[in-house]
Image 1 (cartoon, rainbow, N blue to C red):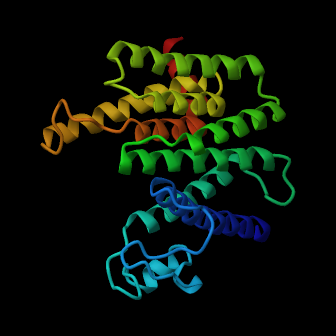
Image 2 (image 1 turned 120 degrees about the vertical axis):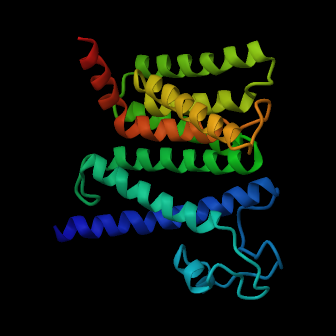
Image 3 (image 1 turned 90 degrees about the horizontal axis):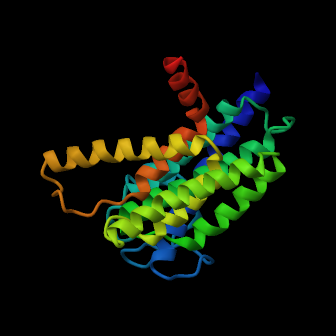
Length: 259
């Protein structure tokens, strides 16, 4: 019990740190800044001390404001850190393993990488309406290799990737790039490499159901118009993470209702 508690604590703290790194990557990639070097306040440019850069805790201590210019710090920073920490712990529980002794550690590390990549996609596309291949393509390659090492059948991986990329590619051709962007094909590549077959079907279906519901609510609340552009990446991220944890259970439930 003590060992598992330590592992849960480590998973959460590690997730917070990864979330902080995610925030850094998101900001610096968009502003074409180096990923190396000390963080600075985006409002006043003052270099942030290490004790003001502790994930989640510094935001609470500073009451959500920069120590130097007293401008508000975006809620994106603590939320990304907290959600990453929670999802890292959720992956740990889902795999039911101990970090120090389990043979499933590689599976857990793969899941953490998938969570990392799709939180990046969620925030980056939601905030900037852009898809950044500099993160997505390397993540897809690494996840694909990890799944091969974990003995996921190559045929299932290739089928999932083919279905996913083709699905988005057909939409791109039909809408002539107006309904979906080329970047979404990259997300489809990562989804297929992450979920394999048949879980990719769950990821896509869940993503589009969530997207349709959210889109309808935004239109009904008059925050968006029917012709407004809505980022697809966040919904694909939600669909993928749900399918990662519950894909097979959803498929089994559906099949049980058919027979």
